[in-house]
Each structure stands twice: as C-alpha cells, then as structure tokens.
Image (cartoon, rainbow, N blue to C red; front, top):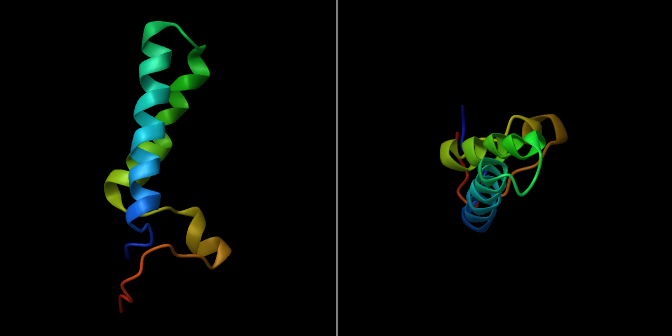
Length: 64
C-alpha cells in the first residue's frame, strides 16, 4: 500500500471523520454519522482505495 493521501487531505479526512462520529455518538445525526469511520481511517492510514481506481494522489512525495 503506497501512501496516496497528502497533508491537507489527510487533516480534513481526520477532522471530518471524527466530527461525524462525534455527532452520531451524541445523537445529533442518525446512525449514518458512523460512516465517518471511512474518512477517519483513510486519513490515519494515508491510503484511499478509491484514489488508485481514479488515478489520483494528493501525496506530494513520489513513492516507488
């Protein structure tokens, strides 16, 4: 697994994911808020499985 999530993208994913999970845990949104686990994990692991399918990468470092 090569890193394909860059700095700003990573921070946004972690913040949005944590906010969605917190909102779901407090009852502010429905159970769909737990989908925040997806952006949270992709931010933490610096890998988004959709990016290779789309030919994208926000990671500035070229990895071989």
